[in-house]
Amino acid sequence: MAERWGDQQLTSELARIHWMGSPVVRRYLNRLASGRPRIDWLTALAPRVLRGSDLQVLVVGAGEGWLERSLARRPQIGRIDASDVSAGAVQQAAAAARRAGFDNIHYRVLDLDRDPLPPARYDLVLAHAALHHVEQLEHCFAQLASTLRPGGLLVYNEYVGPDRFQFSEAQMAVINDVMVRLPPRLRRSAVLGEVLPHKTRPTVAEMLAVDPSESVRSSELLPLTERHFTLLERIDYGGTLLQHLLYDIVQNFAADDPFDRATLELLCLLEESLIAGGALPADYAVVVAGKPPLPRWAPPRRKGSSRLGTVSLPLPRDRPAAPCGSRGLQLATVCRHLHRLATGDPATPWRTWVAHHHLAAGRVLLLGPGDPALVADLLARGAAAV
Image (cartoon, rainbow, N blue to C red; front, side, top):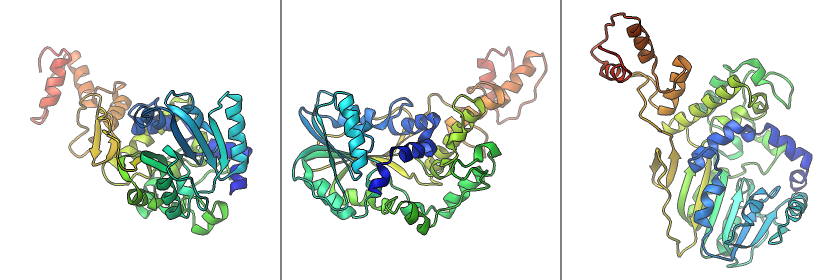
């Protein structure tokens, strides 16, 4: 696997068909993780985790090196030690850092399953999409806790869903309910070159054959984090529907095509609605954990976010939305999209649109007794009488 992750052509192809390959999906995930579609999780957290000066930082699972390069010029940073299990990836990341003129990033090959880390060396440890590849998690977390100085922070963004992608029946049912309704052109597999009729759960044997490290013990990441550290903040941000649904077909959704873009936006809203309503869990999380003595930590109150303990799941509610019906969807984001599709205006429900046009034509309307909100809306929009 170390050799595989050092293959630049392979990793580029995987990035193309990965479910996060669409800018529409990335904006959705950014919004959940940071509260803003154009701000990624690391940029949002940086002002709160980079405290002090001459900080000593360890990046594990550095891959191509984007994470350490994005932090290296910040004034709080002293030295960054970046590591990966793949010697090829380390060489490529080190070369990119040299080309960019960074002299405070230092690279090494590190196997989190086996290798020790120096004690009390770092103020901050960062990981992105790396820890869910570790099998010897007890060893890994013990080393991460040991290498942090008192008051240090562990920050990671990881898949925390079912081990080896053994998704639940409920999850697969939702995925395929959506899959069969997509146009055939959007269901064409880049790997197989054919239209997929549905998605299947990969078997454990298939997972072992392709990548024996993939999500090997992913479901244990959060419990082991709390065993070795104090959890300061956890931001759940989805993936339960989109990850398996969009893998290998996301490249079919053209970012500049209005239909494709709107379809992806609605899929994002569907996933968000199902997770917010408790029908599905979130399979991805951004976590901030501390080593005592703990720093003062106050997760930001984002406008329109719901908070469950230390969990933050932002739900955008820019304005009060008219209900979508007594038995319909109540999420404001979904309602606005439905209003836009029906009337062209995300703030105008279909009943208001119909009633306004009839009143403008001089017709008399008979409204039911349960429509005071509609009456008030029509008066507010300039109707002479209702």
